[in-house]
Length: 269
Length: 257
Ligand SMILES: Nc1ncnc2c1ncn2[C@@H]1O[C@H](COP(=O)(O)OP(=O)(O)O)[C@@H](O)[C@H]1O
Ligand SMILES: [Mg+2]
Image 1: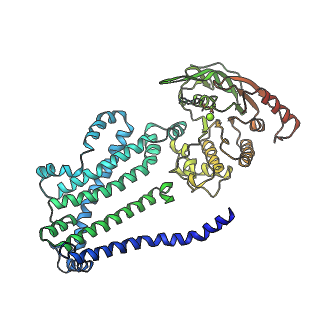
Image 2 (image 1 turned 120 degrees about the vertical axis):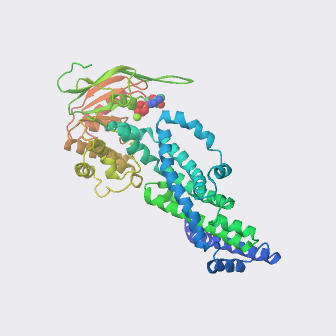
Image 3 (image 1 turned 60 degrees about the horizontal axis):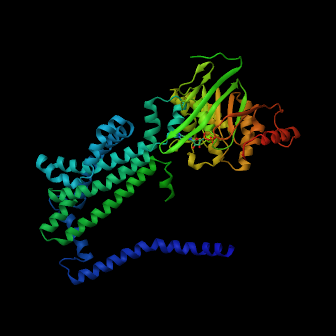
C-alpha cells in the first residue's frame, strides 16, 4: 500500500505536466492539418500565413469602414444590449412563474409552447415586421437569451429548500421576505448559470442574425467573405467568433465566481 | 381559545396526534395523543428512538405544521403559526449557504427589521459564546460539522427566544465532538438561562443535560415515561447514580436506541 502511494505521488507531477501540454499538442496538430490541407487546395483552404495577412489587411483597409475590432464590437454590442434586457425581464418573469401558482397557471403553458421555437426561426417574421435595422437584430438575440434565463430562474426558485423557508418562517418572515431573503438568493447560482448559457446562445444568435441582413459585425464579415469569394476573410471571421466566444465564457464564469462565492461547484474545478 | 395552566408552566401539548396520508401508501401514524408540559426555565429532554416522530412533534409545537388532533398552548394561547418566542435549532440545520456565518446568525433580528448595528452586536455576542470568533465571514461550506452546529445554535439564540427547541443537534457529530458540544451546551445554557426542549436518541446525552426526561415509544410516538433528574451539575457520566438511571431508562426503552 505504502509503496503505491509513494509511486503515485512521484508519478502525479509528471502526469500533470503532460496533461497541461496536451492542449498545445492538439492545437499544433490542427495547425499541421491546416498546412497540409492548404497545400492541396489553397483557393478553398488558405494557408495560416495568408489568413494572418488577411487579418493585418483588415486593419489597413477596413471592410465597410470598420476594422476587425469594429466588427467584433458591433456584434458584442448587440449581444450586450439584448442580454441586459433579457436578464432584467427574464429574471422577473422566472421569479414570478416560479413563486406564484397563478402566474405559473397563466404563463407556464404558453411559455412551454414558445420555448421550443429557436431564435433563428423568428428571423423571417421579425424582419417582415421590423425590417433590417438594429432593433430587429437585437430583438432576435433577446429571444435567444431570454429563454434560458427564464427557465433557469424558474427552476432555481422551484428548487428552494423547504427547510430554508421553514427556518425563515420560524423567524416570522413575511411572504415578501421569504421571496427576497430566501428564494431569490438561493436561486442565484442557477440564475447565473442561465445567464452564462444565455451569453453563449446570444453570441450564436447574433451571428446568424447578422448573416441574413447587416452592414457590420462578424456575421456580416463572413457573409461578405462568401459573396466576394474571400476565403481568408471567412477564416478570420470564424477564428474571431471562436476566440470572442471563449473569452465571453471565461468572463461570465469569472463574474459568477465573484458574485456567488459560496457556490461550491465552481470552486472545486 | 386559551387554556388554564399551572404557575411555572410555559408550554402545554394536549392530546396531539398526526398521521400522514400519501397516495398508494398506508396512512402513516406518527404522533399518537401526546400530552406534555414544559416548565419555565427547565432543560427538558425528549428521548425517543429514530424515526419515532420527534421532529414531527417539534414541527407541530413550533407552529410550522398543524396537528390533526389536539393543540399546543404557549402561555395559555393556542399556537397556530410560528411564534418568535419559540426558537428552533433544526435537526438538518438549514444554514443558508449564500450567507456568511454572521449573516446566518443575525437573520432572525434582520427579518424583524432590527437595524444593522444592534443585530450585528447581538450576533457577535453569541458567535463569541459558541466559540466561533474569527469565523464571522466564513461560508457554511468552509466549516466542519461541529462548527456548523454552533452556527445553528447561535442563530437560534440571537433571535432571543424564550423557549429554545433543539432537534438532535449533535446527531451528525463524531463521538469526541459530540462530547465537547454537550459540555458547551451545558455551559451556554447556564450562561443564557432559557427554557430548552432538547431532542435526542442518546440516553447518556439525555442524562447529562436534562432536568427532566420524557421517554417516547417507537413510532407512533407516545409518552412512555417521565423522569425527574436530580443529579447535581456538572454531571459525571461514571457516577453510580448516573449509571443506575441510565440502566433504568435503557431497560424501559423500545428497541436499541
Ligand atoms: N411531511 C411528511 N410526510 C410524510 N411522512 C413524514 C413527513 N415527515 C415525517 N414523516 C415520517 O414520519 C416518521 C417520523 O419522522 P420524524 O419525526 O422525522 O422522526 P424522528 O423521531 O427521527 O425525528 C418518519 O417515518 C417519516 O418518514
Ligand atoms: Mg428527527
